[in-house]
Length: 309
Image (cartoon, rainbow, N blue to C red):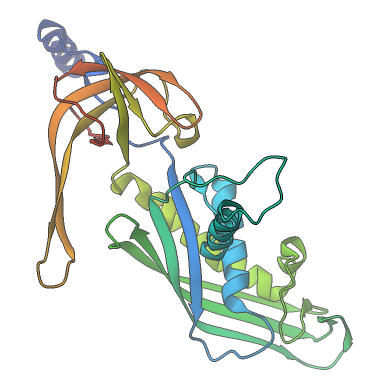
């Protein structure tokens, strides 16, 4: 015990003598939030019922990602496409004047994409019992089962590379009277859908995928960009929304991607650090930072977290 205390005190003394303090170490990306978009999941199962598995999965996954509070969940790809079409329409001059205009150039870029394939889905009810149905919902069966398998990918949107993948599985089986979607249908009522056997199985698989995704975040580089340099201040396009807080220290530099000349695939990415910045003020979407090291920091440079800088 005494030896451990002596070692600890020696380390502290050495840090003081070298002028190293806690601020010399940038915080890890813990607490920082990534923007993420849920892409359409392709249905490659043998299921051909009324239920659109891709739409239902996307709705459940989007909701679960939002509930974590650790991600900035952007609209699904089709939602963002509709938003861009509305912006194009507003810019065409055909929209009525007055009121708040839809403007372009303000769509939040996504750092990560979640996409994948539904590889298997099955639902069945065995046994006699009530067989009542109304508007797509059914009550009945002594033994009901819903099962789903999904292959989920996490993709870096800037490079298109698959960062990680996970096979997700959900199965719900119950005895007695069961409530389910009749051959299957998702009408947009997410709360109601989650009460069905199919919804429960899907949510179980989604939870498995979301837990995996969250566990991988610390391995994925968190980055931003310098949008303005003014005197000894650098403005960064990440703010309170992304979990940035006053006192955080970031490295700034030129990011270089090495691409395969034949395929265009990103083979490696590196950053030549030119300086350090410390956050002094945080707004919703931007951070104002003081340049603490380096004189070559310029607009457009990459901002990133490092363990020690």
